Image (cartoon, rainbow, N blue to C red):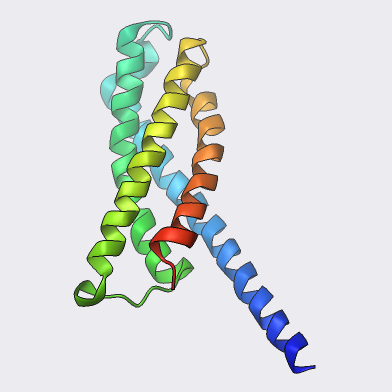
Length: 151
């Protein structure tokens, strides 16, 4: 009976972690899209031809700005709420931060490659962001769970 209770608690902890990751992932995506939308206006993306180099450059510049804001938001929410990391600066918090940023740089490159490829096929920017975001979320969870915030 004790093993069953421990297994249930263990599963609940896993379920809570996944639910929180999805919640904060959705909020991170919202932060990303809000910043991206603001940058679209600033750069005048709506007025550009979707098959031109200036359009692709502007989409990528807007995406980089949105990415920086989203990564900062994601680090603090993942550290505190999702993976419950107690590390402080003296005992590895900076290492966590740099691992997190490094993993996100890699996922950003994956995202950029996916976005650029989709734009080459004259897919509009928002559908392209959605498709590539799915792949990036999966990569980020695995990196966070098994590399960055491991206990």
